[in-house]
Structures are given as C-alpha cells and as structure tokens.
Length: 216
Picture 1 (cartoon, rainbow, N blue to C red):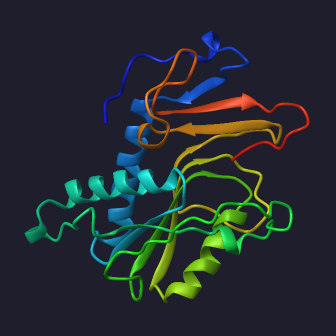
Picture 2 (picture 1 turned 135 degrees about the horizontal axis):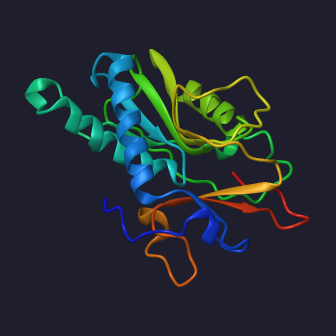
Picture 3 (picture 1 turned 90 degrees about the horizontal axis):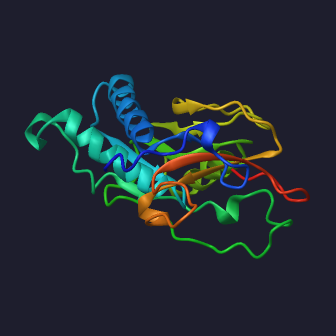
C-alpha cells in the first residue's frame, strides 16, 4: 500500500471536503501497530480468525492478516496463510434498528474453512461509535459457533458509546461531537480519488449536514 500523494493539512481543508485526520501513511502505521499488538496479546497468530464487518472492515481485516503473516515469518515458523484466516460477518439481521431502516441490504457472511469454534476471533471494523454494530456482531457470532475468545480491533474509536463495549486494539482515538461525521476511505472500496475527494486511503472528519444523522 503506497502512502500516496501529500494530503491537505487541517488548515488547508475546507468544510465541504472535511479535515483529513489520518493519511494513508498514518493508516498503514496504525494497522502495523495493531498487528503487533494482536500477536503480543495472543502470543502468536495461531488459531486466529479475523472477521471484517462490511464494508470497510473487510479490507482492513485482509491488510491486518497480511501484516500478521509478515510478523510471524514463514509457515514453518507458524505464520498463518493470510487468505485462510480472513472472513466477513454481515450483521444486518442482528441490528436493533431494523425497524427504523427496514430496507437495509443483506450482505454475505463468509467464514474461513477452519470455522470459528475454539478460535480467537478478532472482529475488525473501521469506526467504533455507539457500539451497536459490535453488539449485533456478537449476536451473529453466537449463531455461527463458539470461539475461544472474541476481540475487537477498530481503526478509529470516535467515542459516544451507548453500550459497554470497547476495543482491544485501536488505531486512533478521535474525540468528536455527535454532529460530526467520520468517513474512512480505502482504495479497495472507494477506488482512486477524483478532484476534490480525499486521498484513496484517508480518514476524514466533516460536519454533518443539518437534519441528517452523523455517520459512523
């Protein structure tokens, strides 16, 4: 992942474009640090499963798996196959706000071939906010198997929790107001930027449009 071109500093950002709070290089460093913390916490990467929460949690989980493999060395050293430990977990039908948004698109849940029973499952999400998405993810996991432990990695923790949930691994704690919107751009999902867009990999904070809910 390239760090890309230089990005605007907060002083150069406009209200419409928002303020870039994490550049591509910042995201890369945060993921590398999280990967090392996962290895240290679990005394290696064996028996790990990374489940990304769509949409952007999935490519983040893939990037983390690649870093875990690089840290652990070769398969003979116990390094995991990064493609074999990543899955995705759709939580749509487990959300407690379906009555407010009944037309949500149901996504796919894909588990590694080894399953999750007896594994350490690391849930991966881009932005941790109220905690309700993670609560839904925990409910979904309970229907899929019985992992040995469940841990949570988030690229950004913006606060304002409504449930007693906190991440085990976090890239950046970002104090926000409830009226602000935190957007994560990743090249795998958002593609190359166009004029006026944030860089392909970036975390941007914007003021919410009056009358709308703050995102993420």
